[in-house]
Length: 417
Image 1: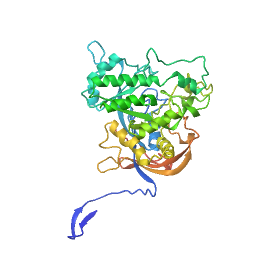
Image 2: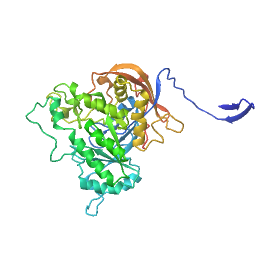
Image 3: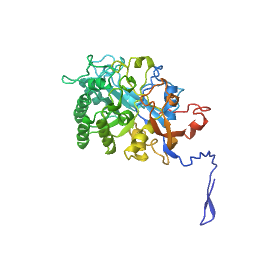
Image 4: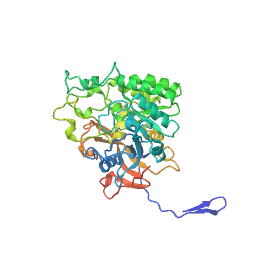
């Protein structure tokens, strides 16, 4: 390429450029989404969800970067970063014989640390107590990191209920067993702790309860370093519409009422909620009890990788939401949350060339043929959505092309972040 100053008529620059052009036509070119909450269970429960399937589903759905807790190299279709886990056994305390300090993990590039304030249902990831939190928050408060909370907390007046006397196939039975007060209790405790450890960035994962929003707004007004995410399923589904005997809608925390959904949208629009993530969480079909229709005892989790952008665009159009707002919530703000805002989340000079060519007008009905994730069920099956990914580009290379049968001819080139 030769650059000429037209005033002087002299050559000002000569560059050898090898360029591949992609004609997007009238389609939109968007920055790749950054999904900061994805459950890919490899190493471990790979039959639930693995890197190969989960990351292909992400790339087909405009997600070019995922952040999770475990890893396996050689299958990274998307870029990847890692969260660490905070449990009682890794207390940095002289009274704990098997302590594991968290600071070296920060230095090694771990993006932050997640903890549960309620039992997770997974033996290797137990919940932490208020005492545990004091120790961890003291250790992390001078670090450039974030502490993430699964914010549900039982106390003497509010706990998870079995409701054995009620219909286990009714979603309302499950919803009433896991009340919003659990999240209110947890966020109340977190904000109290933040008053003492005010330099530590704390983050609420999968915010679901609109009744917790006043506490969050008060914390923000007092200058606490608190951020929040909500999920596609809390914005796009309503408990009022969930039929009997459909375990595929179960997740923890639960999907709530239509009025709750409206309040979450309002909080997202006014900036109280910072970003939107998938919390894609799968399991083997046998654990979902589809034949019994038993929502109370089935394993929970919503499969959505592959059509999250379409979900938010379809619902957002009903509410007057612009595409730029959606990209802010799913790419720019999530990049900031994960410490990647200098390279991800925007189409700008100096940023990584991770982008998506997207047709906002295309319509499709969600069916199993769209499921690149491992276990082929989803709460969204049968929904008609707008917006289809045509191509996904990672580091300047096309890695997904819908017109060429998806991933045919491509190989994983994702990087560790």
